[in-house]
Image (tube, one colour):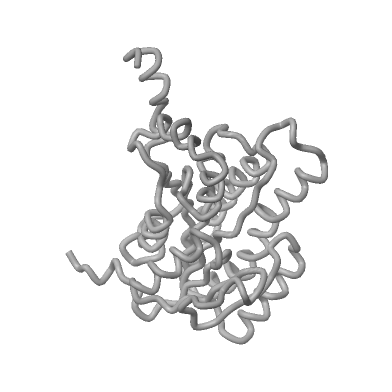
Length: 258
């Protein structure tokens, strides 16, 4: 096996939401694989200290501003070899917390903004004849685990990625999706500080008995960006400690009587 196909030496990868918990892990894993990383986020301060060759600033909730920033980057640097669309946000955990404004806000950043960010890049990749996109969706896009507006947006990303795979594959553009479960980011650390017993409720749902680490999501993304995945497009990969494989809680409570 040629181990070099798993590396990203000489390749440029743009990562949105690079300053977040998963984003920082993406930057670290991409750099370890040899990639030149361009970090995108809302503010320069969010990218401070990261090992980046360039930065792009935009608020993904603003589709017009996002598109303009990306078009500016493409004009000066050309299309990256790969893009990881990672930025996202949610607060409304149940249907009871939704209204028109909340629904619109969560779709704006998680779906509409992701489209505005990637659409100009896809066009540039297609003109060049090569490129890889990785969308960080969620298990919420595969089944209902709460956060209904976020879930609808993340399910939309899956459909969008499949459209790219089918309609731009002939121009050498690949698109794949990663669906993380609960990831042990600083956001979860804050939740656990407020409720130390929360893990006792969460972990029985995960067959591996633990949450996923940011690096595990990042490693899957590195694979999709690499030549090792050159024949893979339009796929959806859960990185979820087994959550979507089946209902462990049902097996334990009903069948094994724990």
